[in-house]
Image (cartoon, rainbow, N blue to C red; front, side, top):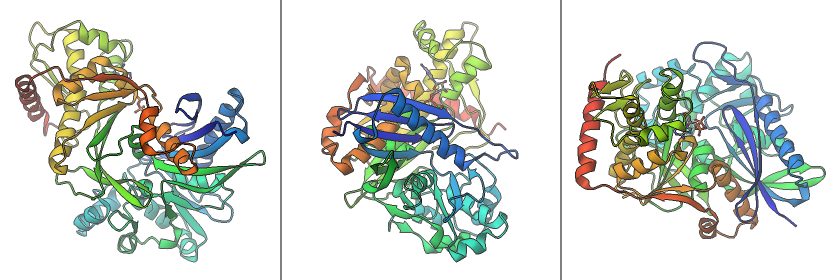
Length: 493
Ligand code: ADP
């Protein structure tokens, strides 16, 4: 009897394995951290075998600690840190270089050159992305340019490449499957999101041979098998972490949006089957290919969200832990007209000012610790509001609701203020492993463990809904003050 779907959630600092039952309840979870390498300033690498082994260790711990037998596992879904890239030998399965992580800035000069050569418009139109070292394409180019003999081996067909999903599945299937999905592919800057295929013109610009890239498969489909104690378990779901979260949040209709409140915030809006283009730096990305249909999403991010709470805790010593911020904020009725723009590393969507810096305005002799803490929480919601408004404007779509997850979504004050300032209904699910849930949903839909997408909505129970308790006058007044504060923070550095 198949009782469980397992999600492998391979993140930037840890690998998790999560078991879900047929009702999408979490049966167990295990995680394993692994080492980060910083060989030069701005460079970030992982050992690909650390990624694989930590993932297998988490899986084995999950199975033994919760007494899950291989024959009870219906299927496996994989979700992963996106953009991180690995190049390896197709026969030995050994990497020729460490994984170059999404955060790594080493290819910034390659990106500058691409811009100088006038490729920005082309790349934007074909991939939905801005040219940035964040995405995988220039990282593959760097490995082929810098590892001795790599390009020759790649051209000969000896080397293959992939994002972390591809790497894991290659090894889980004993080197049988070299695959990825469109949600990961569309973060490489090599994938044409309109035509849904690797783009020869972009590959030529970056001098990357097409044959090293994986086959792009549907997000929910049996891809291969993982042999565990002589039991063959289907691998039947893949998605990059943010898209997996969108799916796990049941944001399957146009206008459904989710926000993950972590160190930064990742907001994704389902924009349906048309790859709309943004004028204000929102990314367009493939959310999933499901049953022959492509669903697209707008993606916007806030650089500093939970990190501003960490700053209150670690640098300002105003709180002992992040959750204390909620009680402090509720000790006062308002921020005493204080606004904090935590632009520690500049401002992203829709301002795009890398010279903006953190700014606190409106202080009076009466401003106290709680006012400042409240203003910090409000700043997270204000920044997300700016992204959400930009998304609505550029998609021409009214957002239906905002589903939330991530560490700071536990903060009730923040969630209520998010609803109050956007006018949106904010919905927090009971399950906090939403990314893993998305991968499990995709895997279980392919095998029939879960019946259909509509049914999944009933399984995903709601912890709490936050409804807007403010009027237009309140919102406009607060917004205009916030935007005044934003103006003060711009161009400082
Ligand atoms: P990440 O995956 O980016 O590490 P998490 O989803 O684990 O992030 O969330 C951690 C972040 O959320 C931290 O920056 C922390 O400051 C913030 N955070 C956690 N709990 C709360 C809370 N109750 N209120 C406000 N912020 C919180």
